[in-house]
Length: 170
Image 1 (cartoon, one colour):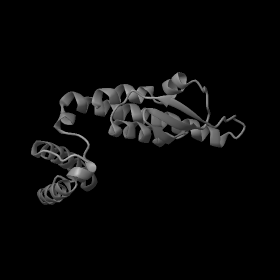
Image 2: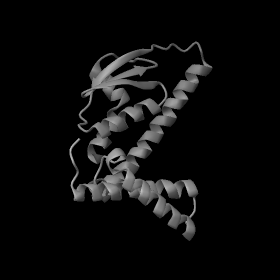
Image 3: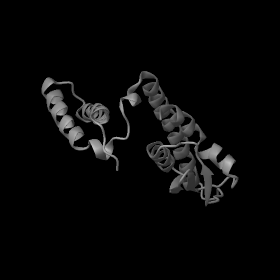
C-alpha cells in the first residue's frame, strides 16, 4: 500500500470525521452541548486512528453536487428496497407464484473498489438479489426470479438505476 501524503491524510481525516460525526448525531439524537463535545472528541480520535483503514475518499466527496447525488441515491435505494420487499413478501405469501432462481452476471462501468462495494451492498440489501462475487468489473448475482440471462438486460433490471448515480458520485 502506498504511503499517503500529509494532504491526503488530512483530507481523509476530515471526510471520515464528518461522516462519523453524522452517525454520532443520528445515534444520540441530541444536539446538547455535552453530547456534541463528547461526539466531537470520540469521532476525532476514531478518525485519526482509522485514516488508512476506513476512508476511501478525499474532500472531493463532500462537494455539494455529490452530496445531492448521495441523497438521490438514498431515495432511489429506499424505493427499490420497498418494491423488492413487497415482491418477496408476495412470493412468500403466495406459494403458487412461480420462482426461477439462478445466477446472472453483468459488467459494470464503475472503476473504484469502493463504488463497486456500494453497488454490491445495495444489490444484496434489496431482497430477491444477492451479490455472490465480483471479479474485476463482472458481478455475479443470485436472483430469486431470473427474468433474463442476457447480461445487459439483467444489468438493466438489477443495477442500472444504482450505477447511474454512483458514476456521478465516485
